[in-house]
Amino acid sequence: MNTMKRKKKIVLPKKLKIGAHIWRVFYPKNELNCTSSESYDKKVIRVGNKVNFFQEKIPTKILLDLIHELLHVIDEFTGHYVFEDKNGKDDEGAIDAFSEVILMIICDNFERIIRAIVKSGFPLKRMVDKIHEED
Image (cartoon, helix red, strand yellow):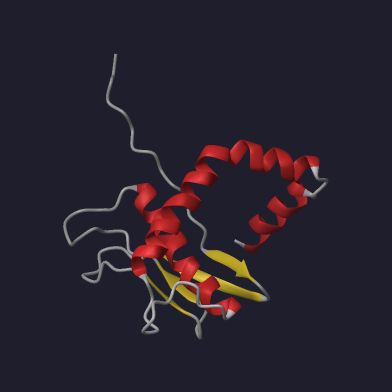
């Protein structure tokens, strides 16, 4: 009996619609620069897939980084800048904390969220089909 666990493959979005804009999401591999970033002007999010040059991130860390960058986008999109400190700098610790909680809520309640969407009458199949057409 093979007791080794296979690595779970995570499927990540290449595009996200935020407001009226389509944002492109990149997951660059084999780059020395392992950081994640967003460019509001270019509508681009980059999510690094490595902790450092030698070590890849685990899937949940990649998702956390994506949510982290989305919070930056939301902050700028809404114009509220709730994640800025007194000096006008982004409070990365607060963004990290909110990213963790958001991912936790999504993972712990995914079935409930989908069930509520379906029961609310949203055309979920049509929405999923449209997403596949865009990819």
